[in-house]
Image (cartoon, rainbow over the protein chains, first blue to last red):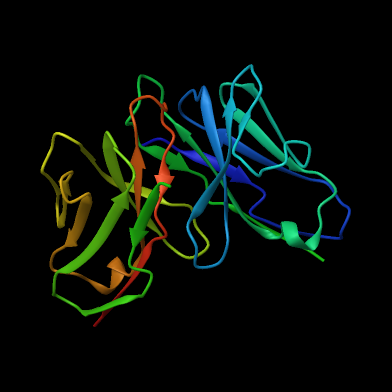
Amino acid sequence: GAVVSQHPSRVICKSGTSVKIECRSLDFQATTMFWYRQFPKQSLMLMATSNEGSKATYEQGVEKDKFLINHASLTLSTLTVTSAHPEDSSFYICSAGQPHGSNQPQHFGDGTRLSIL
Amino acid sequence: SQKIEQNSEALNIQEGKTATLTCNYTNYSPAYLQWYRQDPGRGPVFLLLIRENEKEKRKERLKVTFDTTLKQSLFHITASQPADSATYLCALGTNNAGNMLTFGGGTRLMVKP
């Protein structure tokens, strides 16, 4: 089945550091990838939709200068949390949907646990 | 505003019984609904998809129903096993939003041996 790899799985860093998270679709091309944030015992909150070769679409309330998204190829999207602060600590998950229409399932990476000290 | 509700309280059942999880939505007209399983510290894994014109879908021990009049989906796991313990998320999508999904809060299922 379709595989999405997310890296790193865990990051612990000091406040003010910028952190880059990679999301790769390993066996299919993904024109669209999604980035979510999940707080403990809560659901996935969509942050942005990453579109290959164009600008990402951010959800209301998500700062695009804070969460930089780059989707430079059909198999790779990156999320950079710039100048991270403790309130940015969370579980970040990416997903990719296979092309050819809507109502396709999303394939998720295993998430990145970000802890800002 | 659009709202998707799943029982936030954990569902505890005995091994071998049928687990039934609910997903209710308001102010939404989904074209399809998906169910995912999420284990702690992992990303969600797709289980089943059901479209608005389908009443029921089955896959092995899993069954999903979709009632667009009641605005509700039910997710059943028959002959439940301790390995079925996880959080189950429902997600709704529309035909004009590509693959974008809106997720419910999830229900944690605990199957006791």
